[in-house]
Length: 377
Ligand code: FEO
Image: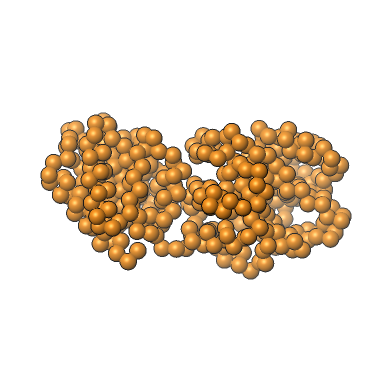
């Protein structure tokens, strides 16, 4: 069950959705009990309610995650099925009350490892906090070996494919989703992956995008994104007002390329933030290119620095290049925004106006320093 949202282009008023998204819900009919796992975004409530028209009763509504794109239609489902009880983690209970206005007596909490018999089918609840909110849990169907995972392993991808058959397309969408949503919790996700290694899983059913009938496809991808060392890649978000920073970015990009270091430059005026996030998953170094506005970095680069710090990628090294008219503190400002990262800061290269020969030489030295650190990657 659930809804496709072909036209949605933004999530959280921040994250671009080039391929729309889906909100997946799952109806499981046991021999004795009927369960609905998750609901849909409140903008698609009518779609779900139409799908439920032929379902006379629901015993339990499992809320794996309280974010509104999955829980927003919970009140409508509870109204339709007055006998239905919500099952969720203890942490989720208060959030459901606060975010959705649901009465407490409609909610039953389940502990980690607790089971629920539907008759011929048994569910096991697997608490998995911080995927990417604190209240999240997964649901494992022991007979069918299906793992329902809420956001974990999901992808913002609207498609009529029930299963992930177009693997290249799903990989890109799932990596984008991981980068934007899961990467800040990489250490926690690592623990969840280790925990899931103890389960026999035939199918992974996330709450966004296609279902995985080849679970190792997405499990291997996550292991790579979470555990692998970074690649020989520099991500270079920048913006330029009068061409000086662009000249520096182009010089540094060429200097790195001849030193066999891959570079992904992103002009923040036009870039898709999801593309930037995807590249941050594997990058060893970030270089921010910032012209100076008033006394600080251009707001476009402030955004890039803030997001890079917040997403907490595997970066090892960082540097700042850019220009100013008469002064400013762009490097200090950017470093402050990224203070959460354990990176080695290389010497910044800031020039007054257009880059002169000594500035280009400094960029060459920066390229040398990066190439030296990337040896062996
Ligand atoms: Fe798809 Fe965190 O909600």
